Length: 242
Image 1: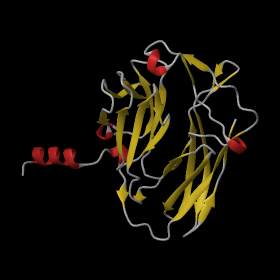
Image 2 (image 1 turned 60 degrees about the vertical axis):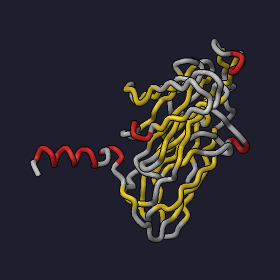
Image 3 (image 1 turned 180 degrees about the vertical axis):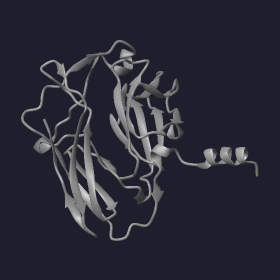
Image 4 (image 1 turned 120 degrees about the vertical axis):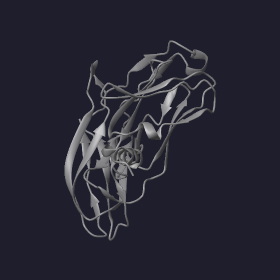
């Protein structure tokens, strides 16, 4: 086989360098769980005026950038274990749904092997667009209710993808692409759990999109901690958002 042809074949079958992850059996795997909480009284959520398709979208929407539930738990924070190159299988399907002129979920996570799709649940045109560090990741026209487009192959680089709708400027969401399946998005109580973790010591990161306080925008927040997972152990770690 000619060297040039061999090189082309390798490029075609090799996984993207940024998402190089190997599925393997995990012996004596443990878990990491915890809570993301807000310190103090959370700021009042801003409202955003709707300028198009008000018969479906309504006149205004709440931003939902910071959702604080019971016991100050923060919803939609993404917790990721860094530095795991071999381990459990991917979680499965991830869907970003355009529903009632909002992204549901507002914050989603994805890892290598996950199937990621965008769905339109509204009877109007949505045009979701994803950007990563200013570079375009996807830009889709979904004119029909029930339409679904798979974007898995477009997610070649780990990072935070900002999701907007070109047709509805008030819509905002996030897709956090991790380099392994070891991630979780906090629930309405701020809780998370990541299981099947190979024993070892890791850096664990918590990402939150940020929020507005006293009219000023707070940039996305990333906090990191160290965590040790013992064989068959259950590690606990909490984060505090300020």
